[in-house]
Length: 294
Length: 294
Image 1: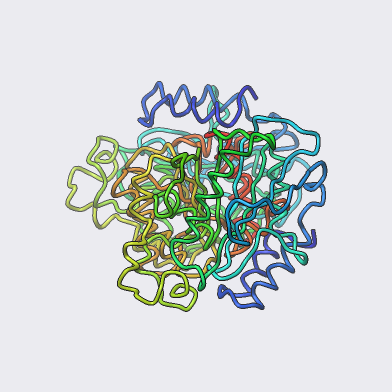
Image 2 (image 1 turned 120 degrees about the vertical axis):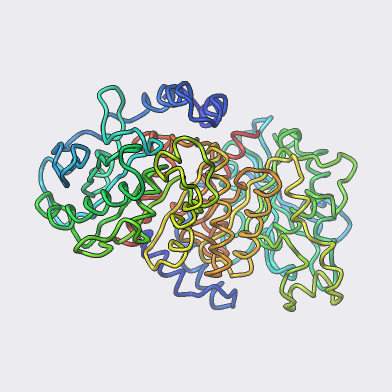
């Protein structure tokens, strides 16, 4: 670990907030070396299990090599602007880090791929999440997981698929909304207000007049499902905007402060790129959320 | 440490959110035993130094027993609904815990008393904070502190005195607003909207039509001083209301997510009652804030 918190935060700030290739690469260069190799010890990975008909309908299960059962289950849904991203990588630790770290917490993890835009538009992501939840309910006991304690987490576009699933945009599958809680990191909630950038039209479509129907803001505020939300200090302004609005509207309707965590010194990527490192801000909060609701 | 995080959170929730004597006593019974006695080791306390003419214008300095110099300085301003509270206690660890813990972080701490309502009304608290800051600038080097790195922190009524000082309601003294940062925990920012309960009229006066002038919301959003704010999951609704509003208005003006931390599983008191315990949520955030800005 080459840096202090202050140095790491300054290095991230210097990369800027825009998700350019240089910014993403720079963030990986900062975050990846600090992941503790010990998180992979004693972890067994079962790769590329199919949960649907498409080649992207595959998932990896992370579980203890020495067995165990009845563990809480974390399903992780990656980001990537709707058009890219994957459950794992040959060149980075992402997101084996989350699967392995989850096993160290005493859980089983399910890390999924899903169909991508523009070929597959709204609500394909949520439909795939729904199918993956259904697979998990049906099959996770074979891997040591407790199907009554499934937590669904996503970041960026992945968090929007999670949010859509929670509010029912993707349909719930045969088991209903089979979750104990949902974790939503850097999300656009009020889709009708979303910027019309290419990544957004690729998924939500060219007819922006329909985007208002795709908003998850009201549904999340109405839900009785335990939620944990987060936004980063160095998130892109659009995410900071939607998180701020969420806090205001949640209070207006529910009369409490929203379950919105500020991740200080983090950018859009580091909440998930830092899981399993000493800089992990998201993981400890996630662990307490699952402890409380699991 | 008798509890898990989940058990502690449930025990705090069961006490309710209203700051009744039973709730305060129950919170102390939960929080105080978990403070680590090791935080007091190697700490020297210089008690009851006068920083003004009133008997409440006294402060305690916490510093390393073995000397040192050039340390960041934390000034702590207690809460107590404007009408009660103290820098220390014969029956509880509060707030020796904050002074001693600060020394373990590598800082010097100044923990103050200030004049109380109803005898001393708005802006007496901020005036006393201003006088304490002035004292600290002038004298803290003698105790190993760096007068260029003073951080001012308060909770509840104490946070309102801090906020008033930051925006200038109490006057700045001969050194100006001599701070490197301010920490505001569970605050009412938009005083014109505050409830008209007795504790509030005791300090802000019976003429509630004037309270709007006492708001710190705009001034804090306008300031260039580094800020760290917090609100607790089990804060009284009025604090959750003002924190939510702060997040919305900060974004509207500054275009970023406010520096507002949610303290999960904490009530109005535990952010400060837990400092120095394994349950401390506030302390690690404060340490990073001071690391970044110190």
